[in-house]
Image 1: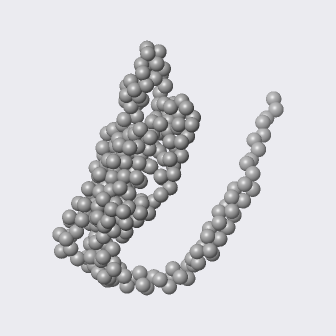
Image 2: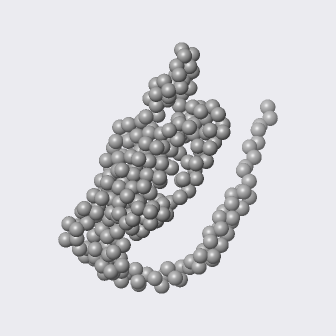
Image 3: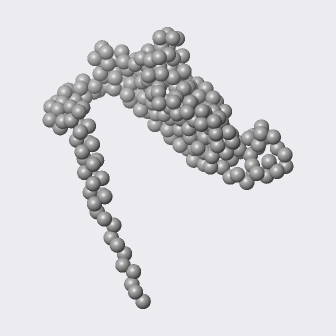
Length: 259
C-alpha cells in the first residue's frame, strides 16, 4: 500500500503577505508624517498634561450631573427612534421576506449609504438647521442607530428557519401574518440585543457630540479644554467612564438573558 505524502504548505504566501503589510504600514506612516522620534519628543508634554489634570475637581461632579443625564436622554431617544425606523427597512432589505430583487437592493443601498456618515458629521449638519441643543444630537444618534440596527437586523432575518414560513404559506397566511407570526418571533431576541448594543455605542457617541454644539456632556468637555481647565476635564472623563461601565454591565446582563 502506497503511503500518501502530505505536501507542506508553501511559506511564500505568508512571507509575501507579511511583507505587504509592513510596506502598507511604512507607507502610511511616511505619508502621515508619523515617527517614533516625534512620539518620544511629545512624552514630556504628555507628562505635563497629566500633572495638570491631577487631582480631578471632585466638586465639579455636581455641575455636570445634569449634562450627563442629558447625554443619556439623547442616547435613549436617538436609539429608540433609529431602532423603530430600522425595522421596516430591515424587512425590506431581506431577500427571504421581499422576493423582488429591485426592492431589497434599493433598501440595502439606502441603508449602507446612511451607515457611511459618522454621527459627528451628522450632528454638525443638524446644528445649523435646528440650533445648538439636544435635538441635533438626538437626530444624529437616530440616523446612526438606524444604520447599525438595520444592518444587523436584516442579516439576522435572512438566517431564520424557513420551515414555519413555508407552513404558514401552505395554510394561506397573508404577508402581514407571515411577518408577524413567522418572522418576528424568530428574531425578536436578536433585535433587542442589537438595540442594546447600539445604545452602548450611542452613550459614548453622545458624550462627544457637544463638540459641534449638540448638547450634553460634550459641550462641557469642550469648554473645559478651551479654558485649559484640565482638572475638570479629568472629572468629566471619570464621570463618563463610570456611566459607560454601568450601562455596559446592565446591557450585557440583559443581552445574556435574551440570547
